[in-house]
Image: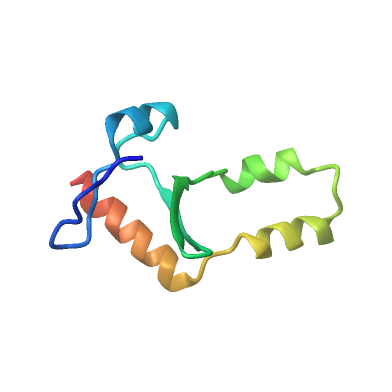
Amino acid sequence: METLIVGERGQITIPRRLREKYSIKPKQPVVIEDRDGEIVIKPAVVVPLDRLKALVKEYDEEALQEILESNKVSPQEEERVFKKRLSQED
């Protein structure tokens, strides 16, 4: 266990040891969850849509749509992530 300091803007730095252990790279998306009174941060799994379709082609179209819908983010969240990513690339 490690103790971290939360910055003025609510930011923390994930220790190098943990970034390396979980292969978290700079500017890589992560998922944060509120799980039973704990905050859990884990690497996000990002699969391009065309790759996802290739992986699940043995499923019918209805199953594919169900998978896509269950992993869909809101338009507002998608826009926020893309804007943040673009601003970090500048």
